[in-house]
Amino acid sequence: MSKVTIVGAGNVGATAANVLAHKDLVKEVVILDIKGDFAQGKALDSYQQASVDGFSTRLTGTSDYADTANSDIVVITAGIPRKPGMSRDDLISTNAKIVTMVTRSIMEHSKNPIIIVVSNPLDVMTYAAYKASGLPKSRVFGMAGILDTARYRAFLSMALDVSSKDIQAMLLGGHGDTMVPLPRYTTVSGIPVTELIGEEELEAIVQRTKKGGGELVKLMGTSAWYAPGAAAAQMVAAILRDEQRIFPCCAFLEGEYGQDGIFLGVPVKLGKDGISELLELKLNEAEMKLMHDSADAVRDVLEVYKGMNV
Ligand SMILES: NC(=O)C1=CN([C@@H]2O[C@H](COP(=O)(O)OP(=O)(O)OC[C@H]3O[C@@H](n4cnc5c(N)ncnc54)[C@H](O)[C@@H]3O)[C@@H](O)[C@H]2O)C=CC1
Ligand SMILES: O=C([O-])CC(=O)C(=O)O
Image (cartoon, rainbow, N blue to C red; front, side, top):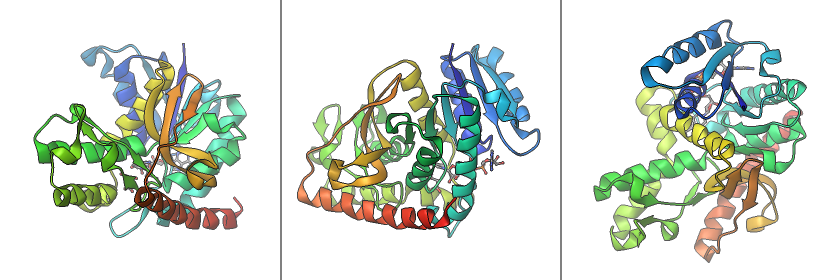
């Protein structure tokens, strides 16, 4: 009888709630937004889909944190999205305050939730939620890697004309243009991807993946929501079902990959208590360098956050 709260009833939050309800895994999904009755409207619309699509999960909307009391899992999507010409890092001054305030309010009503952060800039916003919550690192992490590998898998699927279901891939690093897709850890039904595609075409797909978020911002004028919402719901499902699935997630590193005191994308195992294990891949020199460059980029934004004293 779990309870899931989604903070932010906007594009990503409402999609995550809707996708989660379709999985029919949880009794109650609460959507919270500061924007008047907006969350109530989104929840009501979503719940009116229940009889059409056949799910029982109740969706309710609110602007009152008391209604989030005793949540088992909280997904934070509150904050502003970027517009064309902006980087995710440009969102920090607004979103750091929002994510910190949201996390504090959540913790006033739920003792030991698992928090999944979605708001950007993701790696630093996950750090902000971790600090504001006081929860252990196993219970606070961010969604990005599932989305970024999903884009990588989509581009590969289009290039190879195969189902993306058969493409397995791993990706590390920050959720920015320095992210590190890993062709050496990419297979198609067990076949190394390098046996199926030329080096140049693969490199072009890697580069397109790194800028995958920006491509959509340019096309739509705001950032993506279908794949991000579904990715967040997949993480919630893995926790609710105690699946111990291995996903790339934004997790707190304390020495792993040569990084300390920073949230970055790495493979983790997800189950009922959050992150049960962080996996350290045997990277080659070139991959490790890309990982360190990505960590440096995240660390620059982390310094900005630390200087804000929120
Ligand atoms: N980690 C990832 O891979 C992804 C992250 N994002 C990020 O997710 C965030 C949300 O994106 P969208 O849903 O497209 O934006 P949106 O503008 O559609 O929705 C954001 C919602 O947050 C609400 N909000 C703002 N301040 C709040 C507060 N203090 N408390 C509660 N609610 C508050 C707004 O009223 C709005 O409804 C953005 O920061 C975006 O950059 C988006 C896609 C992927
Ligand atoms: O691109 C953005 O700003 C939103 C995001 O993180 C993504 O879609 O990857």
